[in-house]
Image 1 (cartoon, rainbow, N blue to C red):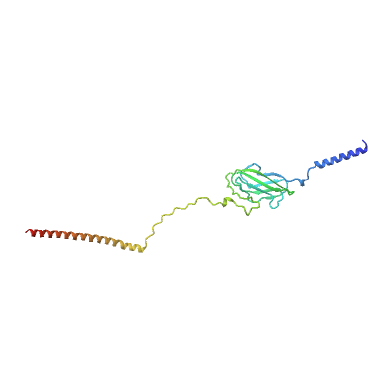
Image 2 (tube, rainbow, N blue to C red; image 1 turned 90 degrees about the horizontal axis):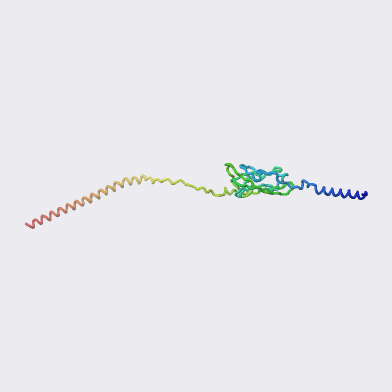
Length: 227
């Protein structure tokens, strides 16, 4: 091999090695998107108590007007975040007050350090042991703090209302004037009744006496006629 050919071969080999190195070199860290490393609770995990949902990412998160958040939706379709998510470097934390037992879904969205948004979801099972269930909201916490409501509080109470039975009302007491009239009227009625009975009796006696007298006179006249 001549020196010219050797030089050309070395140049070609060096160029090929440089090209291969460029292609095989890993992408700069700035071009790689952050990803989710860990969640609490874990996907498909069963928990008996939970105050926060925490997501840990591979890099620090950027929050553009609550663009990084997590929503926790219950088996009834309502949302159970107590307030909007907060960010501490690469950890996204969402306080929750879970309701009835069942399968809950965590839907999250995060803006990675390069400004690229990423989002996913996972589920876990809530199986409390005697704790009071929280009330769900009709909307997620982030962006709806002033407009969301709890439907269970908005519904009217269905508890039957019972009224105590009305007490027997005693008859009104007679006034003093009524008592005085009654004290006069009752003896008067009795007196009139007795007097009426006496008059009727006297009339009957008088009639009876007159009848006897008339019969006696008639008998005397009949005797005189015969003589």
